[in-house]
Length: 470
Image (cartoon, rainbow, N blue to C red; front, side):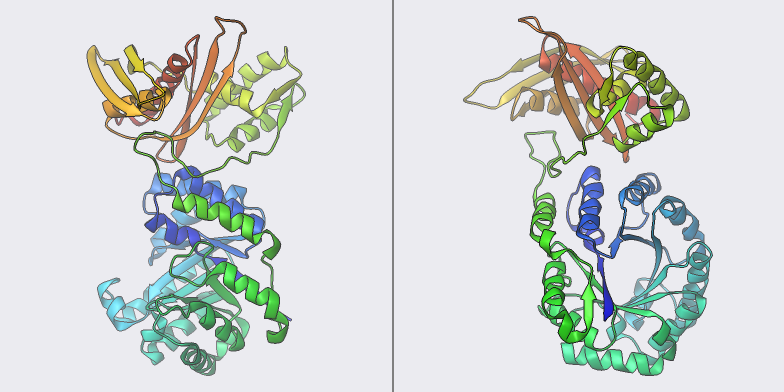
């Protein structure tokens, strides 16, 4: 039986259509990997610092699937993308080019000869980095047939191992697609040794039918989406192949038994949005693997655990965390990841305070929204903010955002008691993400709201010191 590869394009589309947090952009690929899709496609690099970190983070966590990332249509763009992707277990570089006259002229500003040259040079540059290179011929069904054949031949000669043809408008019917693919195979004999893939828009609600028809005509990779975004449906196609694959002589790797649960999690992340009355970014339901450290663990193991938490520490900060870990390990046999979080917040990147807390006033009630009045000091200047929230901590953080004039993604928020009794001390860890990088702060107080504010300001000062942007 022939193996049909499923390439999931959810992350490419949701990045444009939904306001996913950085954490959600890491979580969805992990779920897709668990679902056993063959390829996970990511957005390319548009914001170098943020996107490179995102790609690198996904590449390090995906265990089984190919991780595919597009490069710009020029050889110079390849290095930056490859440097972010190269740690993936199965990396793939994608070269995307429009082959229809309209899109070639207006999107890429290239004539046919210049387009062929750009395709050849970019794929050659990608092939020097990895053997898994894909050429994506966008709007292929509306292209001039002779140019499409020439572009595909050029891509294969330059080193492309997968060729994708796209029906960008979704106007093609299944029988028309079958004829289109037959003509492509007939005129490009080099395709017999290459994986041919298909991408179809769902404008006419025919994308799933086109996917099944394409399999009958030699396609061996289907671009589908786990979330309904006007593409071939991953749940529909994988179930069809699981049920009728024998009739077509094909199989599919997707784990249909786990499909419903994982698709439900992805749907929840894509459909939730951040409340205006809360600073928390909704979407990810934490499913953290249980992990503990002991006094017998070495520095390498501890730093890997820190990276697992999402931190990207410098060598100096890593050494400080290791030193603090050793001191605690002398008194405790087992240290949890939550405790390691506190160590990082306390030991890593200790910086001068740009912002200090002057005063705060919180009102809370079971009949109305909480209100927070916050006053910070920066370089001798007093800054004030006020906000309503769904609770006292929500209101306090929103008042801080009001002062700052920006929203930092609130990646995590932890509270624990460090002493007992009526005057018990509460300890809070706040993790903020800015430009993709994680910063944590720690606060301690008998007032849990006060410790939360301290922790937020601590993390904020680290961001300001490093980025000098506030």
